[in-house]
Amino acid sequence: MAILDNFLLIGLPYTALIVFLVGTIYRYKATKFSYSSLSSQFLEGRQLFWGAMAFHWGILFLFFGHLTAFLIPRQVITFNSHPLRLLILEVTAFAFGLIVLFGIITLLVRRISNPRLKPVTSRMDIVIIALLIVEVVLGLLVALNARWGSTWFAAVLTPYLRSIFILQPDIAAVSALPWLIKWHIVGAYVIFGLIPFTRLVHLLVVPLHYLWRPYQRVLWAWPRKKVRDPNSEWTFTKPGNN
Amino acid sequence: MEWKAMKIRIVSLFFLAGVFYGAAVFGQSEGEKLFKQICVACHTIGQGKLIGPDLAGVQQRRSEDWLTRFIRSSQTVIQSGDPVATALFEEYNRIPMPDNNYSDDQIRAIISYIAENSPGGPGAAETGGISPAPGRPLSEAGEANIQAGKNLFEGRTRLNNGGPTCNSCHNVKNDALMGGGALAKDLTDAYSRLGEAGVKAIVGNPPFPAMKQAYQNRPLTETEVFDLTAFLQHADRVRDTQQAKNYRTQLLFSGLGGALVLLLLFGGFWTRSKRGSVNRKIYDRQIKTI
Image (cartoon, rainbow over all chains, first blue to last red; front, side, top):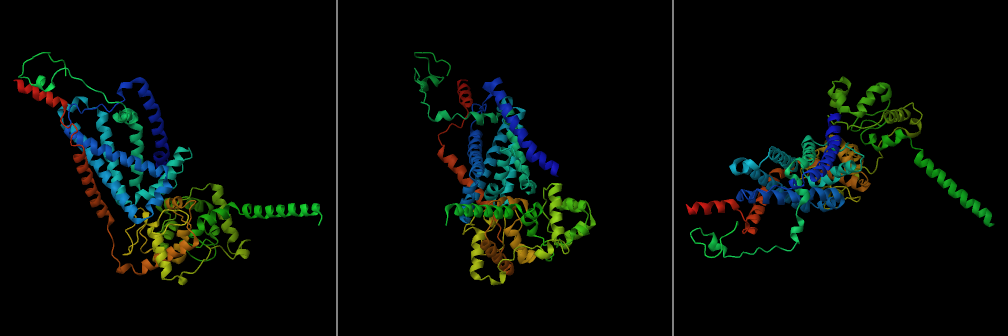
């Protein structure tokens, strides 16, 4: 078992980190325009709204939740030391976990069932969605069966993750944890390593500047409603491509 | 007094203080340090059984090779079907001894420390054996200690050195408490299983890897250990009259409720966002002309 632990908890994170770094840089240099989520809103919007909304809000909350416990473990432990605050945090995080699951399943169903999306769906899309579903289900099971994760993450996993980053891996504590938790950690490493090969690269190029760039005005030189009605005749200008 | 003589005295005072300090710090051998850090939580030398066996003379009963394998990973030895290891595991209530990632030299140092302090060894006459510091006996604990222990366990009182609250990983069946964690062992009957010395030893100096990590650099104080042990003894005594709580189902359903609220928020807030695809509008428009 020690060999497996060493591989999954030391070898794998470093492999994933190197693959991630080399892969993302290479892809950016080689095919810059593929750095995108390759939006398919044009082809289907209703399922996308529910799937993408639920998934993205949920995953942002959970990602920053995990990051907070990694960056300021002491404060998280202090916050959780009161039972009521702990319960509020756990229930909130669990609810966000559930909407991530709801969202990602909606997105998978959308990809598979809608014939319009077939041509723009690659095999890697399905692989990464399937992996995310496994990861989220594992995370929810950890939250349910190994309570209360928000505290012990800060107390036990943070020192482990820190030991990885300072290149002095210490897996004594983490290898004693149940396999359910270890598979959730392993799943995270696998997904992290696959980022450069999937549409997940879009998380590196989130268009945050949209929030403060000046908005663009679109001017129409003719009454749009009228032009769009196919029964009306062309009165002045023949419409261009809208 | 002449200044020169005074100076010599001051310097020699500092020198002597340094020597004593050095002796106190470096005089401890590697074996002693490791034994007192880890092993003493569950074992004595010549002072009787604790959670694990009395280790007096263990170096004569077992081979060095066997001891090394067992100290590194007792469960591996047990699973390999070793009869002695299996019998010990059964005798000591199937409480697994944690693995220790020690080098051969470190293990040899521990074994020689045990040999020195076993009856007949050079250290034994001086120390009379090794056991955890006795501390206050639990019979002195009163209602106030139980209450203080309960508050510490649940987190209403913060642990002095900033360690995580017990109930983030452990559950104790007690009506006065919120349901605890499920990562580690349920402690409702910990006191019957481990006894006073066992509970105190584990709480004060956790031998299990994850717990050891969680309380590294933030150990519990002696008072906290005492109060928590008093609370665990009380919880064990009253356990038959208490109701078990199922936080698993509650967490699941309150989470589902929360998820529903979030979905309603999305549906309500972003009512004006485009949900139909662009193509459908173009498609419909084309259909109309036919």
